[in-house]
Length: 129
Image (cartoon, rainbow, N blue to C red):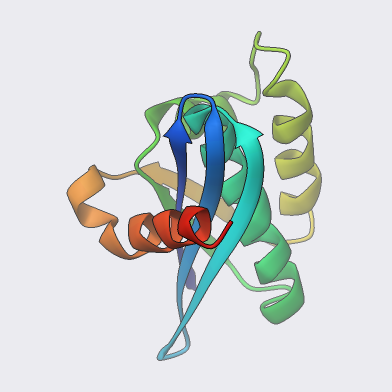
């Protein structure tokens, strides 16, 4: 099972944003920072999940994925498969399409203090923009 930690960050809300992805897989760690456009913090959190799924499609096709996010909004939206927010609808659709490529996909909310690596990576992506 692949453990994936995601986080999004914005400098301002909206503002320059970044996504962090921290993966524990088969005894190894992979870390990614993705600069994003100007967007809200919530949008950055969704983009972090999308970016993480892209990484998993490249490196871990066919593996079981266990995602962790400190965004209750993202976790609840992905678990329910529904959002009223028009800004989140295409991001939810992208997540739903990508998870179909994996036998199992789990997403769980974790407290911010349990997500320091992805948080650092998301903030690094903003600094790099």
